[in-house]
Image (tube, rainbow, N blue to C red; front, side, top):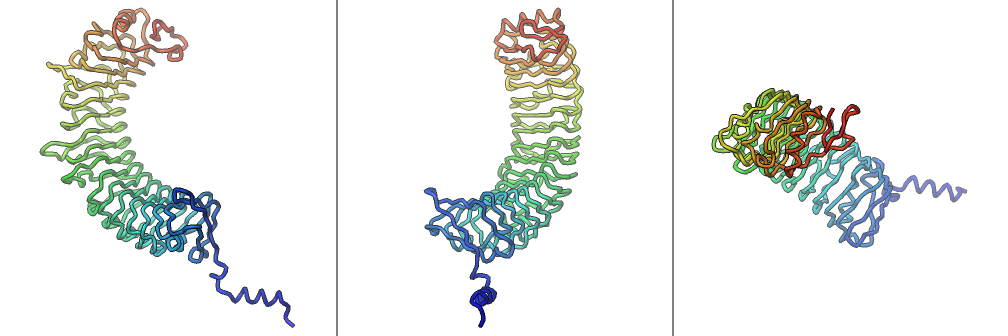
Length: 437
């Protein structure tokens, strides 16, 4: 006679896998969300895993914590038909399967940051046509099929930073007509096709920093509406051509020697940030009528005349820190009142006469830190610069004997300047708020 336990084992072997399907349960909170903590789904359990909740028809948000999923079980979207947000950040996901989102008809936000995804297949998110935010950053994605984002026409934010992309296939973003923000930073992109973003008619913010781009045609974004921000920092660019509709360009740490403008009837640019490049003159920057902030710190500028700043009729902030300036000049015959903040730190000044700034009378803040200044001359500081509220002088080499006239002018003005003992070198004394020797 066959023993009872032998019969049980034989029946268990004969039963289909779904009979023993894994079930993940969560309790819905008042805000219609639930958290699944410590969930584990192996690769051969993705298609059979089921879900349970007290009121699945109204749950809108699921978050996994300390979980290991391998993939997204498609039954989740069948069980929770009104699911709008899924957060599986850092959940050890290794694959995205093309039809796993077939029933994700209400999903609007999908966060898959910090997983182990290596590729995105064709129509990777088929069914999730209402997605507005898709975060795939900090994975290991090396390949994206050209139709991976097909039919995601409501997507507004796509985050692909910190992956292993070296190229992007033509047409990969063609269906993303509503996309507004795209992040591709910290990949290994060596080139970007001029037509790659032709379908992204709503794109206004693009980050391609920390790649290996030798050329990048910024002018391809010339459109009838404003493009808010492009960050192309830490690539290998030598030239940037700025379209008239771009409002902000950040391109730190390239090898930029040339800045060009494609504008013929005015430019919308308000911020230009180009530190750590190879520009040799402020005059190498074209005139941008609406420019408010210009940062040319740590370039190779040896000479500067405030006439160059006057070309930008609305400039408020000018940063020339870390260049090779030993002096500045001023050939202006009329004052400019729009310039409020002037940064000249980390240059090579040994002597400077502030009277050179008399035609820039509305300065609020002047930064002269970490130069080699031994003497700073000024006549009638309060009258010449009536609104200067801060002058930064730390890290220089002032001579105490030569600093008395400066101290007198500072004390009779509203300008804050005081250093502390911690700002002084060992051999220096702190006299009336000035480190000197």
